[in-house]
Length: 278
Image (cartoon, rainbow, N blue to C red; front, side):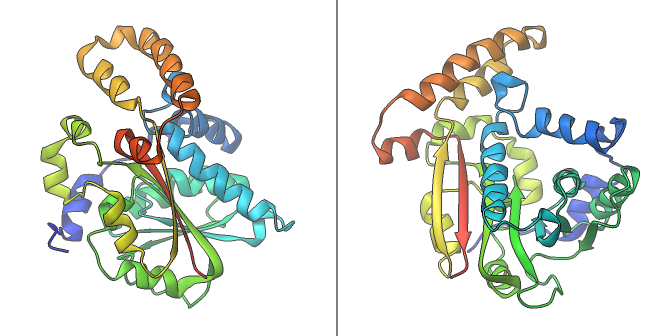
């Protein structure tokens, strides 16, 4: 694709010596609650500016497996680009069997420590490997999820083929990421870090071409998130409460305003991608 690719050493430097702040939670129940508040909640409710789309992807994953009538403990979920393992450990608190894959061995070390701290090491397995070569058995994974991961690995052409190989037939992948159809959003990107890690700005065309061997469903979201990002950039940290109050208005407007699909796509600051192996 011609994107800037980086080797695993760059990611190891990024993660070396780090540990999730959620490790301070008292037990796994407190961890799950803290994760939901921090990573799966809209900005106005105390989460990040990408909290809504991440929560949306999690809800879709749980709804997908719940409708089977089987307990969550019977499902194996791959956390694509697991980083320090925060999402993996959260999935384990819900009962899933989890395989976290990240190119960084340092990230996987942190993830293992996090899982062990909350007594979930038996439900989590971490693999320091490329997503394009996981080493997993064919059709051994029920579902895949990735938060803020697709824009990292979309530059590697072998990943979709590997996903197709390890997913069971009918299995899905749920990815929550930033979106870049509207070039105005690009001013909020950390260009130095993006260049260092070889990150990619996502577009609808890019995503559909990448997952051409899957059925693809795209859900653009957060048309007003640019204003949240702007407030975070220009207002003092002491005004976070005010920013969240204003964000609640944006959140409501985002869901009641009727617009064409093309306009929604253009204005969205985040996107949920769902792929299905048919």
